[in-house]
Structures are given as structure tokens and as C-alpha cells.
Amino acid sequence: MDVPLVCDYGSGFSKVGFAGMETPLAVFPTLLGKLRHDNPLVGMGEEDWFLGDEAQHKRGELSLQYPISRATVTNWANMEKILFETFNVPALYLANLGVLSLYASGQTSGTAIESGEGMTYFVPIIDGCPLHQSTIQTDMAGQDLTSYLLQLLTDGGHSLVSTGDREHVRSIKEQYCYVALDFDKEKVKTDAPSYAQKVQLPDGQEVTLGQEKFFCPEVLFQADLMGRNDLGIHMKAFQSISSCSPALWKILFGHIVLSGGTGSCSGLRFRMQREISALVSPTINVKVTRTLQSSGPPLAMGTQMSGSSRPRSAPTWLGGCPLSESKVRGTHVGAGVDAGVRARHGASLQGCAPQRSRGFSRLFVTLVCLSVFSNFSAKHPCLPHGL
Image: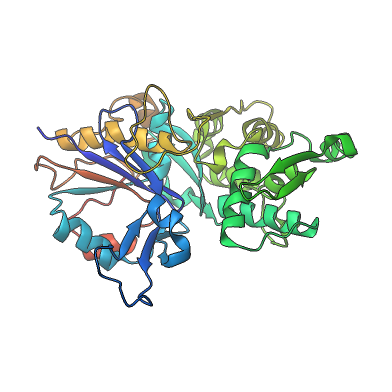
């Protein structure tokens, strides 16, 4: 039997590899670049299109395209051609990111909070089935934190105007920013010149980081800091779970899993634990965990990853491996694991029972980890609608 290919296409990075592997074979920016045809010698040996890191390095010479924007495929027609005409994919399964994140944590029931580059999702899940009516999404995510940090540094007197500068700021965000357990106390504690930290950018420019380090991710909890009228992610999580049957609250509040690049921000788990615990009854035990993350940056396209080294959002990809293998076998990865839960709360789970997938008798499966695929599924009704 051929091994399924697991593809996690994110707004920021894509992870691709075969099911059964410990890590993806390739991790690369979800970015395309087309060579500008203002050179009369173009076409003499140099390819027109560049992907991932190549496009990133040549960005000054290219017209850039982002195939995934805010977790949405920008051109489904091209995606269909690539999958079914170029690569002749015999079978395709579109999976729910929240479910994959939960699988990666070793759970089949709980609440997945998947926060990446473009979107943040709150997905209550029972026995591997997402409760769609209670799923919430918000566009407060990694790229918004980068924009806010860029604004803070610019307001502080730094000149950061180029596209390259934005990439440097994104790197600063990932390396130095953290979520304060108590925002007001942190402001008092860090209100001293000695707290400032100097960081040198690759171009030699020096940036001074002070309270920006925790002001930046604070917008996840206080969106009004950057002028948005929206609830914090702790309130969104509370709303999502509270809209489910009270019979499920113990399970859903007791297994909250953070995943994605933004979900791995230092201090976020402890802050979420504190904020959500303050919103619920003392009789409900809130437990917030994080999927296994890597301390290293994503690798270049085609780079082999050794040992336990993983990119920050690889757990979602890892969660897709057992699911893709189960689809080849025609089974459900969570079947029977939480049978007792399903028996006790059958009425609450009506309409989300796992079904055997159709069209998976072929030997090769591509699992595309995307959260938004309704348009594609409508065009291809023969495909299962995912979890």
C-alpha cells in the first residue's frame, strides 16, 4: 500500500511529508513569486516562477502571490488543476485543523485553539468530531501581532518601512515577545530603563525593545490596544465552549489545547489558564496545554529534519498522519476511544457521528489541512466533507 502524503498549507508556512514520519520532509513559506518581465533577456535559462524560500530571497525581482490568505485558498481553480491535473491525485481528504491539533496532543475530545499566521479558531471536539455550531473564528493572529509590533517600534522612533523590515520584526516577535500573566503588574515591573533590550537587525540597524515585548501579544486579550472592537481570545474560547451542552463542559474546559505558531507564544498557556478559570464555576477544572513545539525556526524547503526537531506548527501536520492512515483503511481514528462519552451525551452530539469515508479505496491519499474549503467541496460533492 502506498503511503499517504500529508500536506498542511498555512497562511505563513506549508508543511509536507508522508504519513508515518516523525517530521515533515519540507517546510517552506507559502509564497509564490513570478519574475517581472522587464528584462529583455528573460527566458534565457532562468525560470519564471519561484516558490517558498527562493521567492523570499528573490522578492525584490518578483511579483509575489500568497496562495493562502487568512487561512483561505485564494484561487481554488488553480488548486484543483495542481492536485487533479498536474499530480493526478486519486483521492483527497480535507481535514479540520482543530481536530488535527487535538490528535497531535493525544486527545480525541477537548477544545482546540489553533492560532496561526492568518486566523485563530476555537473548535470544541467530541470523539474526533468538531461541534461546528460552536466553532468560532477570528482574524486576530500572527500577522496582526507583527503589524502591531511594527507600529509600536515605529512610534518609538525606529524607521522600519521595507518588506524586509517587516520580516525582521516578525522574527523579533517570535524570539523576544511574551504574554504577561498580569498585564498591569508587568507594566509597573518593567517601567525602568534597565528593562530595555537592544537587538541588532541583519542590516545592522539596532532596535531597542522595552515594554513592546509584552504589549505586542497583549492584543490577543485586549484588541482595543490596536483599535479593534473585538473580544479577547479567552472570551472567545469561553463563548465557544459555553455554547455547547453543559453536559460537555467538563470535557471541553478540561482539555484545551493551544496550537499553531501564535499559539506557541511564551506565556500564553498560563495566561489562558488564568483568564478562563476566572470565568467559570470553581467546580469546573480548566486545563490548558500546548502541543509539542520546536524551539527552532522553520526549515528551508526540502531540508531534512533530524531527531525530534520540529517547526513550531508541525503538531498539526503530525495530527494528520494517523488520520490519513485511518482513511486509507476506511476506519475512524477516534472510533471507540470516547465511546462512553458518546453514549452518555448522544443527544448533544447528534449530527456529528463519524462516517466511513467515500472514495478512499485508492492507494494514495493527499490530506490537505485547511480550515476553509466549502467552495471546493461544493464543486466536488464526491469528496467527503472532512471531520
